[in-house]
Image (cartoon, rainbow, N blue to C red; front, side, top):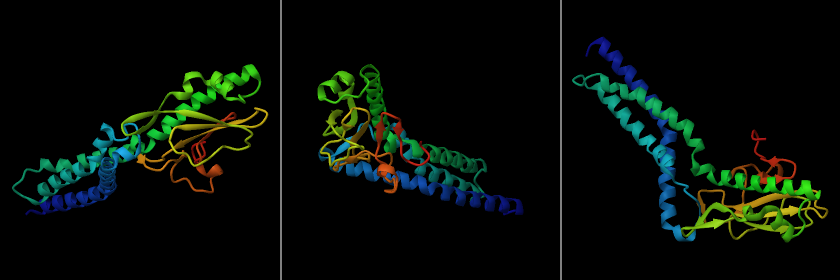
Length: 252
């Protein structure tokens, strides 16, 4: 092998080593998707799940890790086999492009955020209607009948949750004489709790959820499943009459 060929081989192998390091989080994501898919189908009938939690985008990104490894293998063979043409080593920069693109996209796939986005949109719609009702009556609803009048059909629109293949609609419960957001141990996701003080001057909306792509356990929906308990209201997802309480640092 000539000195020029040796330098080419060494540079190519160093680039491949860096590419393998970039591929590690992609492979971890691929493993997570496969593991979730298996667990979901093993217990499908018993679980609450997010609608379309595993879509085409998520599947495509799950293939990014194996594709990067395949491209790096082409790069290694082109670098060490002198009888091969040199152009297959272009697979290495292509692997870098795939890796960087996937690393940017993975944090935003629906696998992690579709539940939060669905709940944000629904609670935002309810808040808007409650504020409109308040402008007319100079207070917020204090009875179920007033609540139904204020919200109409929006209160029971389809939610992001499923159980046993059935789509679950949002429901709403009125909780009177409250001075803080309401939380409980719910039995079903998608239940909105309208907590209001005794004078109808302030309200808070919270909602039950699963804080995961699928789960057999229902809890109160949060801004982030991993929000530290020292956060205000322990990261509870809350809408109020004043503003959206999006209580994770950096999202105010």
